Image 1 (tube, rainbow, N blue to C red):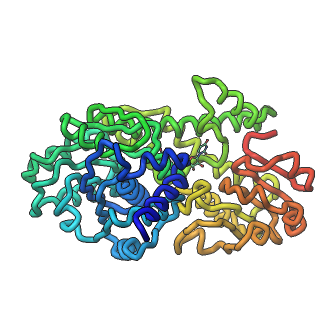
Image 2: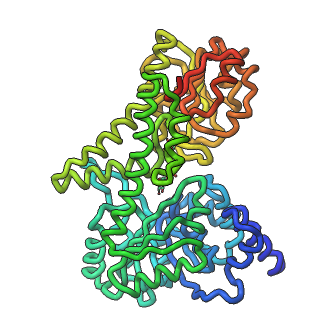
Image 3: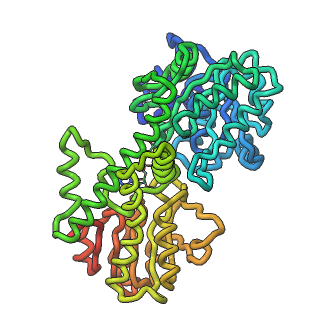
Length: 466
Ligand code: UDX
């Protein structure tokens, strides 16, 4: 490919990933003349959703990136030009920037020439609910015994409890790495829009104890379209946890309003729309449904509550938010049971399995709770999802997967919309009604038009809809 062709391809990839106009993308693209920019050598530890997007986007910004992961299979795929996860625009971005990207399982290899090390490893909860930071400490261990003369800073993108930065600083000092700066740069990635949110974020949050580290991380984001907020490390750590907790609060709040709507005859969709028109409240995260799932909200809200509990503070508001969320899928099953009398040997179609549309991610998906509850009630589960990768575990090993929504609904006693996949709006609902044994639909995402569904002959139940 000629340099000109490669450049045009890179511009098109950026247009597709960010929604930028072609002219804007051309101006922003790495190597564009006139950009005040210093390319850096960045090592990204962890090639999961966050690490992959971070690495691909830094390469897109013009940096030389090496991605390191402990899973050899994942690294082999990446080296072969395959993308181990589904994330719109990510494959194009990796391909367009392949000259600036390399992949390794060898930590020493990754660190050797790095000027910046980004930590993008997972921090799952331990038995006490505290964050398991063992993978973070492993990254610091890998800095020992290799030449780190060029290394200017270690940057934390993983979600960690407030105070972690201080502990990492002490660990670096103890390891003879006092010359390595430290910064917190929490991610606010929304899956399905991850590349776009990295390159055009609402804000970039940088926590640092020294000006050099803050300046370095700010400069790394040169070419990113969004304001940069520099603050203390502890503040940056808290911004991440508090932002997710507030978003989760909005969702549980509207789900509570939905429950009251069901009991009083109001329609939560009309209510949420008008609430959202108040500029002080905003229209986002007011969609009633089966509750939030995914890799962040459930984990981060519990982590913040545990962190508060460890200081002796019972975070009651957050406890209520979590409880409401845990109830949502259970209430859905109860409502289905009320309609059908019993769920025993009933054939139930689940439409959608992922925790939201536009991703293949099943982490903490409400569908798993719904399916497990249905199994516990003795139901027979038939499901459809265009991307889900549920793994070889219950409840999914007991469910039958189908290639289309109508196939999943054939012979069903009820269908449940679990994920707001746009494909569900295109379903031939007349055909579905004829294919079902009993035309009952529970719309767990308020995706469908109740009037149309009823006119087609369905018994329609939504969340918070009369
Ligand atoms: C979220 C945050 O948005 C992101 O900033 C953070 O870094 C990680 O967590 P993500 O998990 O990708 O991102 O999904 P998001 O689109 O925020 O949705 C989270 C969950 O809330 C989904 O299960 C979604 O279905 C649910 N949700 C969202 C609602 O039930 N109602 C809403 O109004 C919005």
